[in-house]
Length: 187
Image (tube, rainbow, N blue to C red; front, side, top):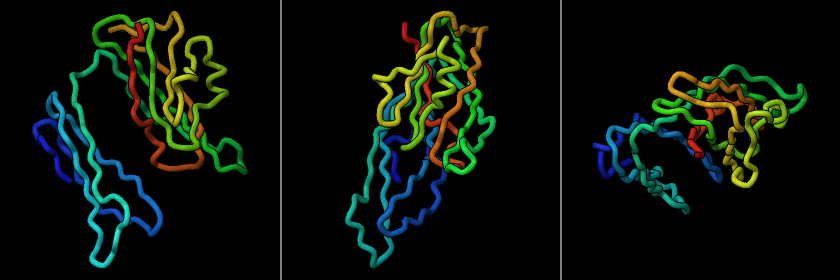
C-alpha cells in the first residue's frame, strides 16, 4: 500500500488476508485524516509465487480530508437479535446522537450505506414516520437517506437522540457499526 501524500492521512496496520479461489474478501482499512487536503491511496494484491491472478491486482482511490463538519453523528450498537427464530435475518439496534456544533438545524438528512440484503426495518420506519422519512428516490443500491420532518431541531445544546433498527441478512461483527454514517443540513 502506498500513499501519495503521507501528510494528509495515516493508515493503520493492514493484516494479511487469505482469499479463497473464485471468491472475494472485503477488507476494511482504517484511515485517519491528519490534515486538510487530498491524496491517492494505492493498494496492491501480491499473489504467492505460482499463483496467477486474472483480475486487477491494483486498486487506487482518491481520499479527501475536509474540515470537521458542524454537524456530527455518533453511534453505539445497543443489541441484536433474530428477526424470526427459524430465519437467518437479524435486527441490529443502534443508538445515534445527532449534534450541531455551531447553529440550529431544523432540516437535516442522515445517510449511510448498507451491505447487500440489508434494510432499515420497515416496522421502525412506520413507528418513526412522524419525525423522519425514508427518501425512496435517493435510497438505492444500499445507500439510505433519512430526512427529518419539521420540529426536530439539532442545536449546540440540543442533541437529538435517535434509536434505529436495521435488518441484516445474517449475524456478523461487520454489522456492529453503520458504515459511511453522515449528517447534513438540508436548508
